[in-house]
Length: 284
Image (cartoon, rainbow, N blue to C red; front, side, top):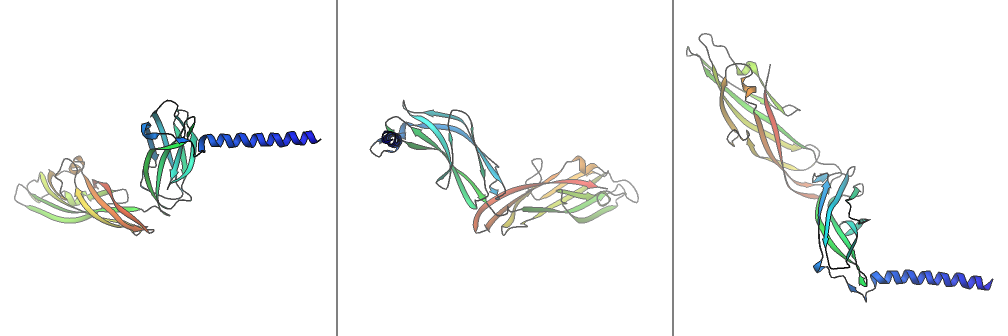
């Protein structure tokens, strides 16, 4: 009975010694650390969603692929870690395949900064780490700011008939929820009392309003234009046939560049630029 007890105690001591030796192989401060100056790692890191602003109900996916390492003989890339704010939140063994980290944002708030770290091992050396990618930044708001933009256009119509009769009127139109600005045909085209009018001259003065409906962010309109086929100017002048459907054939779009900035949920938001495109169409 005594021999059995001695055997169990001895076996326990052997296991403890093995564990201690194994740890010492990697963590012993007496060992020389791996020299990372000659270690280079390249990779493709893809983070989705790509939006800068997220909320706690969302999940980030960070993929690390095409990992290539050049290093002195004996240095092995054992695993790759995903870190946030300097702490490791996930670690996966590396075997050459693409690694995918899925990160629920439930417990994260404010500005978060992810980084990808490679964990190196080498026989008779202390473990080391090397930075693969950093500055994967996102802002996690309790509620993602909703950015709104509405277009409004002052329309001036002028025309002269072959008999000398003049037609002139102006009116305002606004974009709808679908982002389309509808211009009534009965305000564009006309029939002179005598003679004919083949052309109408249009002046479209573009304007817009921008705001955030669920946050304290400020906003301003920084540019309005009419696409690459027209001057970069908020006012567009053109002539079209005095026939319903002529304006639609121009396929006009108004581009509004707005900037959103300020403080929301105690987080300072650097200026974010958003371009909204509004289609210009006729309505009957």
